[in-house]
Structures are given as C-alpha cells and as structure tokens.
Amino acid sequence: MGNEMQAAEQRYWYAIYTKPRFEKKVAQDFEKKKLNGLLPLRSVKKVWSDRVKKVEEPLFPSYIFVHANAKERYLALQCVGAVRMVSFGGEPVRIPQRQIDAVLKIVELGYDPQPYQYLRVGDAVEVVSGPLRGLRGHYFEERGKGRLAIAVDAIQQALAVEVERGQVRKLAPKSE
Image (tube, rainbow, N blue to C red; front, top):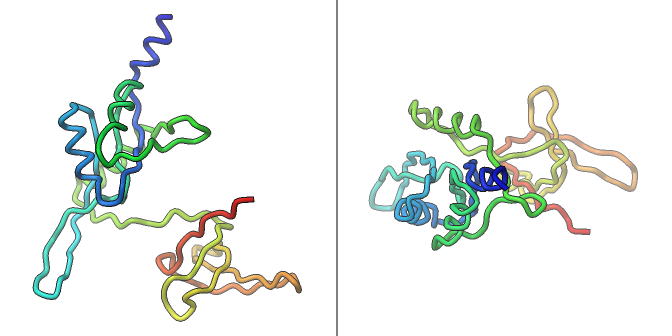
C-alpha cells in the first residue's frame, strides 16, 4: 500500500491541451490553484493597419505544461479552458524532465525559437503555400532537404520535389 501512495504523490510533467487562445487563462488558473505550470512564451511582432506591437505568444499554441501528481492533474483539468490531458492508450503521457529543461534553457537564454512542424518521413502532407499549393503527397527527406513525393499508383511511379517545411501541413491520418 505504501508504494501505491508514493506513486500517487510522485510528480511528473504532463501536457494539457487547451481551447485555442486560452493558454494564458489556464496558466492564471494554475497560479490560483497553486499548481506548478509552465507556459513558455515567445515575443512576436504583430502588425496592424495602424500600429506595430510586440506581443507574448505561447511557444506551443493550445498547450500548457503541468508538474503534477494524480490529484493535481485532476485539478489542472478543472481549469476553464483546459480540454484534456495529452494521453496515449488512455494514459497521460509523461514528458521527460530533460525536454522541459531544454525548452526552459532556450527561452531563458533569450533565443528566438520558431515553432517547427513535427513531421516524420512518410507523413501525408498538403502544400499550403507557393505554386504547388493544394498538392498532396508524402513527406520525406533526402540529404537534409525536405521533399514531397507525389505518387501515380496505377503505374507505380512517383515524382519528388523539394519543398520548404513551412509550405506543407501534415494531414490527419485516414481512419480505417
């Protein structure tokens, strides 16, 4: 029984998915509930028709991190704007401390991190900008360059073109 109690009290880092643009509200609610949250921000210049302003935006839109035990995870999900715990197979995913430390170090040292789309070789993608906009294919890398493969299945042939990673978006996997 003692080991189960200790395990329930053990704190780990978790990610919580939030409603869009609710990250700062959830972070404020964490503070009120005395939860150890982390919302890494980056400074971005926003241009409006009448002015330019620097604003702080979440580094990971729609996500906030919490260092919590089982009870605190439950409290974190009660915050207005918190949608769900990032999970795999029904279990909350623990984020390794070294990854949290890396994010903190980058932000604390004043680097200007840019969000980078997480793509794996073979992911289905669609080109969202440029002359190839609308084309769909699979992402792969060759000698450090991002490439888009367009297949013609009937003749078992494919074409590959170089694309900037920012020009494509990952498509949701098709459900069987």
